[in-house]
Every structure is written in C-alpha cells, then in structure tokens.
Image 1: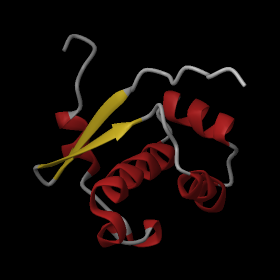
Image 2: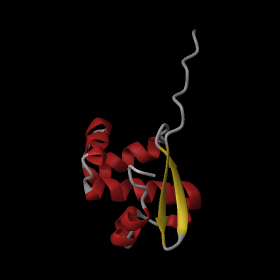
Image 3: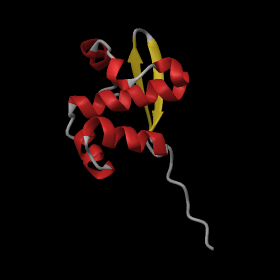
Length: 97
C-alpha cells in the first residue's frame, strides 16, 4: 500500500488570559470531529467553511480544541467554556504580520 504524505502543519495560536494555545489545523482527532457534530451540528466540511467565514461559535470550538489539546481534561467541557473574545481577537495575528 503506498504511503500518503501528511499535510504540512498549519499552525495557529490563540492567546487567552496571556496563555498561548497552539493549534495544528492539519490534524483532527476523532473526539474533536464528534465535538463538532455534537456541539455545532455541523459536518467537518461545514465546520471548515464556518471557521473561514469567521463564525464565532465555530471559532470558539476551535479555541476550546486548542486548549484541550494543551491541557487535556483540565480544559473542561465546551458547554462551560468561556473566554474574553475581544482580548483574543486583539492578540490574533493580522494579514500584515
């Protein structure tokens, strides 16, 4: 069976309360795909389109995924997840960076 090449990491980072949470969007865990369906009612294709369209719920779920990847269960549940959106957006890289 031929090997398939793995996509290059698409590294993002979210800063929340001064803590950086990296997110490699080139990989997706099964549990994260289930969370997309459970919490947003979207397929993965719809989720990708929603993130690209800057849908706040989709972005929030992606931020929670990044936090969960770094902290594990200590990140808590998505239902209880909250963060200062304006602070996170102010620390996001711009097209010029």
